[in-house]
Amino acid sequence: MKPENIDPVRTRRLAKAFKDIIAGRRTVSTATDARLYLEAVRAQPNPSACIETMVASEHGIRGISTSVRTDPSPVFLTAHVVPFLQYLADPGIGAIHEGSLLRQILLAIVSPPIPWNSLLTLWLDDTLQDGNAEIFAWLSLEIITLAGQELVSVVESLIAAVEKRSFLHDTDPKVREFGYRIQRALNLNSIVESRYRQFNQFKYRE
Image 1 (cartoon, rainbow, N blue to C red):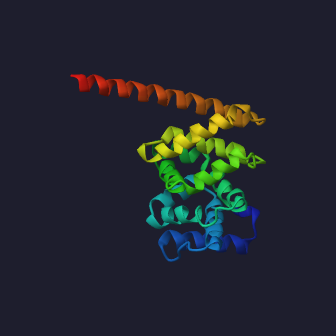
Image 2 (cartoon, helix red, strand yellow):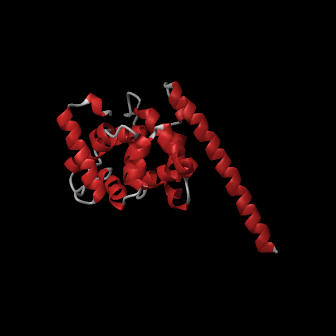
Image 3 (cartoon, rainbow, N blue to C red):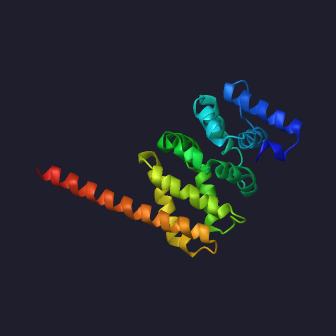
């Protein structure tokens, strides 16, 4: 969402809400607050600068973590959470500090994995439409790429889901492209983990 697409009064309200939440003068405690904050973030014209501001503030990260968990309904997820994820998909964000800022935001979204599980269910039920499936595929790839020990359960749930419904079989070519990249990343991770286990076994025998 760009500020020029909404009226000036709304733009000012969103800008104020963003600043107040980042500064800790306002908290996200209801679904209405969550919708406002997620919209306020998307209204920021410079995604990279916006994310840097959010990560620099504990209130900014906490606000996102709360916002994506206030309402688990499919309507809220597709109307507010998925568009926020689309905002995060801006290439400039992933380029900042080798993706470390994006990783912090993604961790706030999927750990604990309640929002992730809800999105995963929407994918399995084939209810992510109009480009939303592409955003979910992007999120899946980022999680695999940036994953650490704290995301093991999330990756495992994704692997189980892909076995039931593969990105490679989607009608959208962009989703399929993400699917190929996801498959390559999963295969690479599997090879690395296998070699790590072999190394540990060798060291143990010594």
